[in-house]
Amino acid sequence: MGWVIGRYARGEAEGKPKGSPAKIMARLLKLVWKYKVRVIIFVAAAAAALGLSVIAPYIGKRVVDEGIVAKDINALTYYSIIFMVIAVCIWALSTIRGYSIAWLTQRLLYDLRSELFTHSMELDYAFFSSTSAGQVISRFTSDVNAVGQTATTGFIDAVFSTLTIIGALIAMLSLNFKLTLVTLSLVPLIVVSVIFLARRSYRAYRNVRAKVGELTTNIEQTVSGMRVSQSFSERDRENLRRFERVSFETMRANLRATLVMALTRPVLSIIRAATVALLVFYGGNLVVSGEATIGTLIAFYSYVEMFFNPVITLTVYYNMLQSALAAAERVFEYLEAKPSVKEQPKAIDLEIKRGEIMMENISFSYSEAKVFENFNLKVEPGEILAVVGPTGAGKTTLANLILRLYDPQEGRVLIDGVDIKTVKLRSLRSQMALVPQEPVLFRDTVLENIRYGKPEAKDDEIRDVIHDLGLDPLIESLPEGLNTMVSEGGGNLSVGQRQLINIARTLLRRPKIIILDEATSSVDPYTESILQEALKRLLAGRTCIIIAHRLSTTFLADRVIVLDQGKIVEEGTHEDLLRLGGLYAKLYELQIGKPMEAEILSTSPATRV
Image (tube, rainbow, N blue to C red; front, top):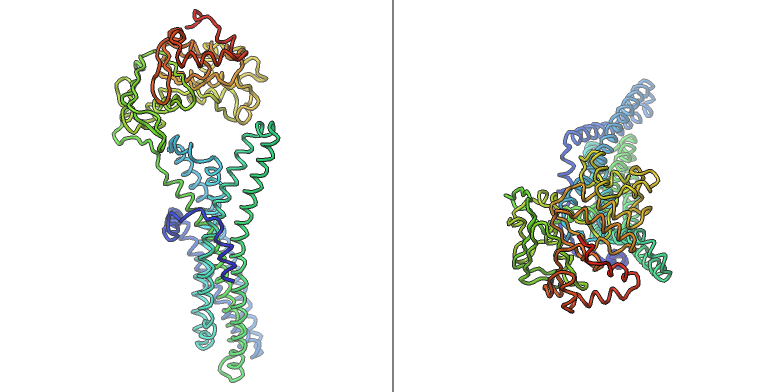
């Protein structure tokens, strides 16, 4: 049997635990102890209920010996009333205990989710670029639920069960010492069984939590990419195959954990049955020989049940605890994740007045992949700089360094002569704005999506921004204007409409520095012309870096730099670089070879701002 359990419990483990079960449990108890008043109320109610529960079998002994055997009606009446009073008291105390459990559970779930969310806001771009959304979501949902339920309901049941076992032992010892020894003779078998099964249980449940995270990731990716997935029938089938594989592995991991748990109760039930058999045989002999009364034997049987029921509860809780510890390990691992970009203790507030950007001797790499080495760049105040280059040249990394989403391994990034490492992150980013290639919209009205750029903005201020950008026709074309609901991800709007709303959100912030990350690369020529006009108004008087995929956006720029393998290989205006006949000219030729691009790129340079 050990070979079978070991084989099924091992599974595809997630790796070695990052914290011992004892340390994880101590941390969980610390969370619960924050509400010590509620815990004390529970303990008091549980202790009182326990005391009454221990007394009840002893009252039963008196009923049998002094009432039934002695045929005393008065004694029967007296003890029946006592039974009734005890039952009512136990009911009242159990109600208090049950509500305390529910309150603690919900409060702990609330605290954990709040702490996870707050910590998520503190983590940096590097963390989320290397962690799937599904893994993050599973921490907030299934992992937190497992931790909350077990750390409160399970823990409280464990405390109550432990106290019940102690109370039953004391009562048994007070009734008959010999019968107590017989009852305890099989307890070592319980200890060995629990230890044997528990070792396998923790590994099994860690594997379950890992597989649940993988399954959540798979579902999240499939749902978010459903449109693309369904447009490629082969890819659709591949997604189904992948889902079935991950789902099957999750099912198998759960079955392994369930097998360990399923073996626990039967093993303990067999030991309990053997104990009862010993009690009947040995206790019956004591009654026959006159060393014990019938009432004592009946009461003792009640105490044996009182002893074994919580033992089984504790064992089941122990298995639940393994699941909770595996989930808690993942939750605490998330909470202990540290951002690679850290704010200095004495960081300052920075007021960007000119908008000058300096990158001095920047060296940066992702793991072993070097992007920049001794890289230098200066962007003048109010200058519009376009950054062009092939895929992997370092364009987006350059933007990320300026936004301080990453820190360089060497060198400095300065804004108005101040090293941004010495500046408070909120102060820095509140004066900068990123307009990404794929605009992010939330499930809310168009008005609130624009207001996201400045939560305290009044409606009139938002309407002024829309007017300044010339977006009145866009808003008027929507079913309910600014009150039009945006579906999840902006699915009920075109890419161009989403980007225009994003641009309005950006202008509402009145940023001093703007970074456009291929902001027009996913739209048609007509929509791009509208976006270009909006961008001209957005960029006026501001320092801007344009990460250019479509070279039509370089017409907005005062200067163009061409990156290749992390180095500036060309620099100048659009016309200068075309005349140079280098990499920029080659990229230009590749793009004007496409019919859709030709009209855009043939626009006269005189039309540029």
